[in-house]
Length: 310
Image 1 (spheres, rainbow, N blue to C red):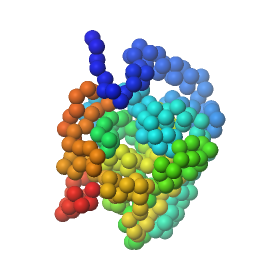
Image 2 (cartoon, rainbow, N blue to C red; image 1 turned 45 degrees about the vertical axis):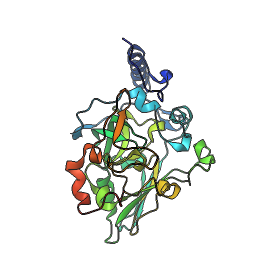
Image 3 (cartoon, one colour; image 1 turned 30 degrees about the vertical axis):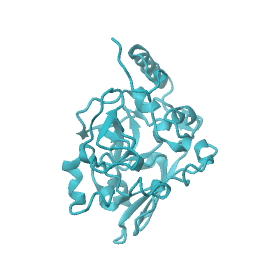
């Protein structure tokens, strides 16, 4: 049977099922043979995460295949094409890695990544991810609630927003040698959004250590917002009093608002947001308000004009 694919997914990106299963088996064997070893300063690709507990936050949608999740990415630090991150990110060093938590807090912290992961049990969560470009995925993330990290920093009464800053290193991230964006990448949330139980810091997907091209070693995932809100390769989390100016807001303020809530009634200036195409599907489907998480998060925006605050 011939299965048609949209034009923006190249045939080379679609892995036959037998080859996919063979690849996963080889990864498992390689991991078993070298548990605990490092490669070029990074945790070995394909390494299984241990101690992960089941989570109640699991979308019922069929997950997007591993190969599509890891080879069709927006990560401008490694290039603007969807294929560039998987090709260019493999040499990035993700150990040793630290994350600073500071700003309007009484207990600022600098965490080694492995220590940060011990702050709360890791959970597997299947979340929908909606890109502003009108494509979507369903990804089995592994992560910890962002709220657990913020609480330990003891936010002050002045902490109204949370600002996330990603790694700035053009030697490792060749896309930063261009002026396509103002580097480093900065994103922000309102503090109640950051504290919401759906908001996580992801460190893996499909039960494995987060691949470099997906934002290793730690990235933000906010499932009711467009994907550009999910800052990757985070090095600093700063609590602030004023709304931070995020990278895409500075680059194109008419196209990318601070809130970035999935709203099918508000079109991007250059295309409709009413429908989306799930990667792997041929036909589009209606876009759901708040990416289908309205029951959990709509109350955060009660009384707000979601056309003005887009």
